[in-house]
Length: 117
Figure 1 (tube, helix red, strand yellow):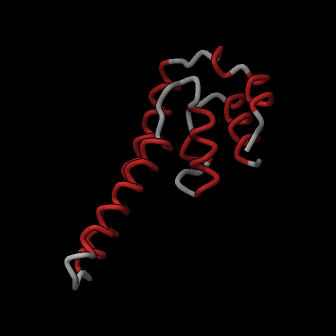
Figure 2 (tube, helix red, strand yellow):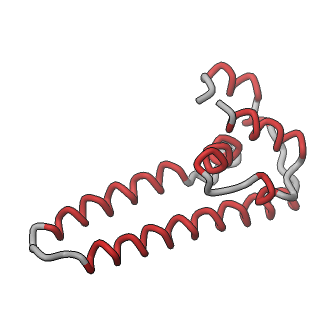
């Protein structure tokens, strides 16, 4: 993960996003979010189907709470942090660089550098 100093030196807060970039960013963000939510739902259904004891319900509740907190933490669509969010998604395999088609190459280069940390 890049240090705060590295991130501040990039000045992402000052980036300007064109309308086309905003559309491309939203498309990629929503794609990753929907895939992640689909995975959580599929896994939850599988886990529920395997329940044999009432106490196991609470294990699923805890797991779902963990998943919700992770998703809330990982999916932040503020433009000031979106490059870091995209870098994390690339690093985790939820997005590829091709999914970010339409975003300025200079921004993609920064995202790529952050993802490599």
